[in-house]
Image (cartoon, rainbow over all chains, first blue to last red; front, side, top):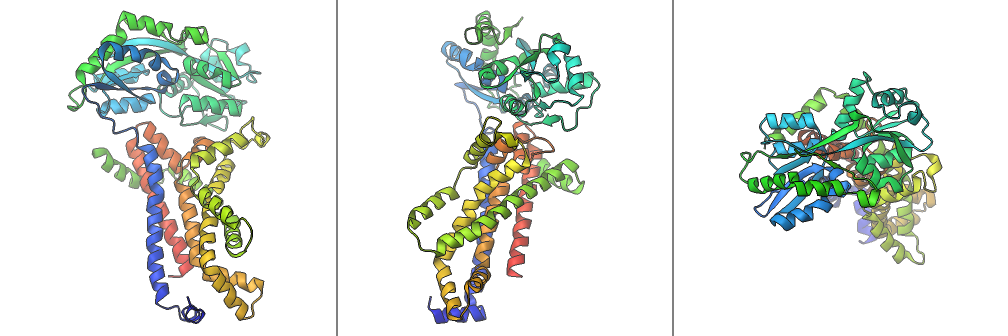
Amino acid sequence: MELKTWKKNYKTGGIMRTRNKIFIMLLILTLTITSFTGCSKATTNQTNVIGNKGSIILATTTSTENSGLLDYILPKFKEETGIDVKVVAVGTGKALQMGRDGEADVLLVHAKSSEEKFVKEGHGTERFDVMYNDFVIIGPKDDPAKLKEKAKSNVMQAFKILSQGHSKFVSRGDDSGTHKKEKKFWEEAGIEPNGDWYISAGKGMGDVIQMTNELLGYTMSDRATYLSMKDKIELEVVVEGDSKLFNQYGVIPVNPDKNDKINKSGAKAFVDWILSEKTQRLIGEFGKEKFGQPLFTPNAK
Amino acid sequence: MGYIFDGIIKAFKLLIFFDKEVYSIIFLSIFISLTSTLISSFIGIPLGFLIGLKKFRFKRIVARLLYTFMSLPPVVVGLVVAIIISRRGPLGHLRLLFTPAAMIIAQTLLVTPIITGIIFNNSKEQGHQIKQICKTLGGNRWDTLILLIKEMRINILIAVVTGFGRAISEVGAVMIVGGNIKGHTRVMTSFIAMNHSMGNYSTSIAMGLVLLIISFITNSILYKYVTGD
């Protein structure tokens, strides 16, 4: 632009400026809109999975996936039946919601009372026990709250000590099976957990263990996830073996009347297979080699 | 389909009935993103002018690097910040991980290149003319700077608003360094991601709408303030 005309425009604020303004307004609008596309993508990637004949969608908890159990047993299922299993690993709350919405064919979750309610409301056809593992409370190696001494195998006692607030306790806070279990313990102990010491993370088990490790606090974890991360963290088991820490997994085929996309026969094949003696034995062997102890105990009837 | 309408209705309910948790999440989001945008502006605007107007060696390489940094993935920024400030990291003793301060640091790293880049690009094109005019009119360096800011206020606004838009809408970095702790580091984007993973679609949609509305309002206010319309 010539210096003269530029000067003129600068003084009078000519047409250029109005046009500029409209352009800028549009630009701002576009930027506002586009700045959201990135984040919506990240949050909606798991919802639109719909099954077909050759495959089933298994909605399960992060613990079965993270522990590596599914990678260990599912190839055998594919081998035997030719059915592909698409695993969607989410919290129990979300898994049950996927069942309610008819977005999954079969569920493998661990919150017995919610599961029973789910079947009772007609979202699933039946529920079967599959296996169990147990929860442990883990904390820093020097154990500042002295849980190992005072509450070695007594969850209620441990929670009471933790509620004094001298150490941080990291809660899943995500409505998962583990979180539900933890909430039940607080309720039973008659404690309303809040304050600076109670950290509600809203994340999966692996993230929560990382956070606990970082904050040198305590948390309740399923044994499988803890063992799979053990080498990377400085936390150890401080409370274990209480019968209350028992964690039962159940399998539920989703009610096929929900929509015509649900693979009824595939779901049935999966349920029959996971309850079969052979698969049950396979589950009992998983983890022995790597961790020296089985991670899940099969108990199908 | 029903849950989409549920979400929209719930969004208005959340806002009208002053849900304390929701409002504290909204304010924390705005606070963190505004603070980081502000810090980024203080660094990025002068830096952008400097790179744009000064002649120096390696200017091309600097410009190319700057453009690269403008599109840094938030998750990578989050990861790098988390590694540095985690307990085992070089700044571990500051105990910054899972605090709002950590989130501000991460967002500042994300936003500064964006503001710098936009200012650089604009001052490269228009800045020299403004500088020359000021010289012709007998202004000193200080006058030049004031005229630059006055003349390029719209470009500055665009830079700042773009930066803020990036900060308030990103989830990758705040999720990693903030940890999404309830009542402490939970912001709108991580709240949405969490509720989605919990199967609470309507709550996610509600907060998503709130986020859109807030972004629209902030943009309008900033725009009005600078143009005086």
